[in-house]
Length: 200
Image (tube, rainbow, N blue to C red; front, side, top):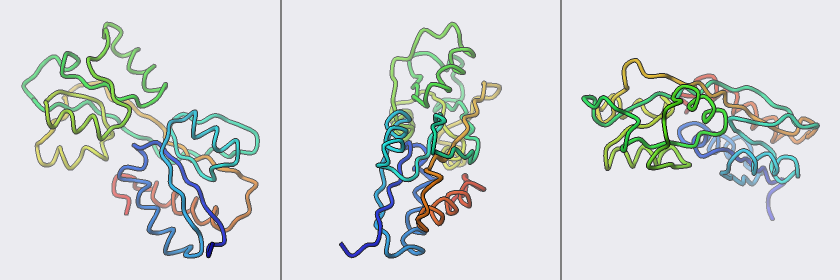
């Protein structure tokens, strides 16, 4: 009651963190009569919600092409290997935290480290992996845009010469919707995506 429309936006947590979160205050400023529903999830759930019409906009790494849905490339997420101990030489041992960045990352990671038998710890959310490494030591792959403050403060250290991985980030939405809120929201996301490392 009291709002013209409810706009539902969903994304992987890693794309909310430090990037999409900046969309929310801008939406409230530019669309004060729109109620916003923000969700987090993984690709299968996000895609199903878009297909079912329960979600208006979804941000993810590995979208599916489906009739009626538009898939737009936003930017490339650079994942780099960092460690809490720059003197350590074996970064994929017990202290390694594997972050589930999706099937594309899994395939690239497996191809780059064919002898890697598996991590002692796997997490589904990037900030949880960073917190684990900061608290207990270790290493892991994370987006450079999220790591920069820790690198600058010398709390984490980039592993020189380590393999880097690129994950394309996409925006998916129903191209047939004519709600002004969709146009405004997608344009805000595009503007933020021009400089995702400094989204404001």
